[in-house]
Amino acid sequence: MLKQLEGSQGVAQAVALCRPDVVCAYPISPQTHIVENLGLLCRKGVLQNCEYINVESEFAAMSVAIGASVAGGRAYTATASQGLLFMVEAVYNAGGLGLPIVMTVANRAIGAPINIWNDHSDSMSQRDSGWLQLFAETNQEAVDLHIQAFRIAEELSLPVMVCMDGFVLTHAFERMDIPEQAEVDAFLPPYEPRQQLDPANPYSIGAMVGPEAFTEVRYLAHRKMCEAVGTVERVAEEFRERFGRESGGLVSCYRMEDAEVAVFAMGSLLGTIKDTVDEMREKGVKIGVVGLKCYRPFPFEAVRKALANVRAVVVIERMVSAGCGGALELDVMRALRGLDVTQHSVIAGLGGRAVTKASLHKIFDEAVKGSLPTETYFLDLDVELVERQLEREAKARHTGPLPEALNRDVNDRKLARGEEI
Image 1: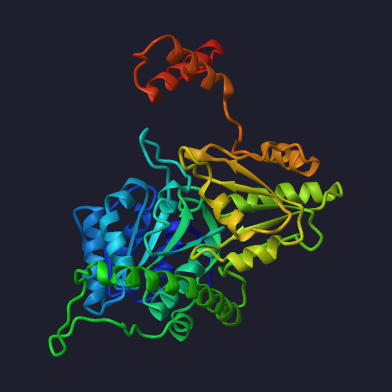
Image 2: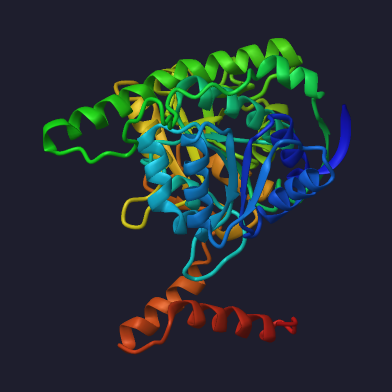
């Protein structure tokens, strides 16, 4: 059924259609509207036979989800940014135990300095936690990915994060096709846990493992995640056949049929990238887009196949690993090992900074000409702001907190231009 909804409302309705037994709710922007709407659906009786639990923290939310899952319930929660970091210990426990919990991460920057706007530093910081990570490009895809996520999680007995850009998607009103309950029931079978606490057959969940077997435990977890690539691809294909639309999977290719240069990215930024590529195509530039849908497990073969015939790829990501650069770039580099493909790493949109077509045109043009640097490149970096701070630090040891100093410079410039602060 077509509905005009806020992204968070669409996700809440999709989760409700999956008939969770337990929803663990703790608010943090920009995911709060998701759990609020699930609470309303429970109170109105739309979502039945579900225990909606208001917990005291994000750590408690994941801990309750773990308890619900090992008790045999279909468990769901949502979080963002600092909330995800607060629950990290339990996030790793859920991954290590192989519990099929589904969690929405409304992607938001990590402090300090505090920032409530979008980038991918929160979920990408958990890339080693043993959770699958699926990234939505649009709100329709966010709806569809949640339905697929429960199916994937329960087939594999592994937890799944569905990542959607905070505010850009969560608070945007768009037309979405929300499936009927019967359609979802036909696609998502009743939950049958692979491991469940049973007094008649007692065993320990979360037992200590010593050096004699710990390597083997980790190897099997790694192997299971690698094998999950096939499941993600198959479930997306079955979803397409049943619901009639492409959604999820491993990668998506756009105007790549004869592309000489490719842009590689994930999340809502793909929309702006595609618009920019369309404009360049009108001028005869052979450029295309590869969108990553499944970040963990990383689909090395699919990425290699998608980029095998280009001479250059521009990897754009909304996070930075301080002292290293982009984390996504390293995965792409491994996927392209042995191929003659020049790789460019671009950090863009940190902390919610707008990524404009004008800026994208500039770096794409440089990539086509072969003049874009191969070292990590920060899009729209305010060099003057950076140089002023470096100059201060060279002259004095005590320069005060960095965020305060940069905010002061920004405000001084606004005052000089007659703008309001």
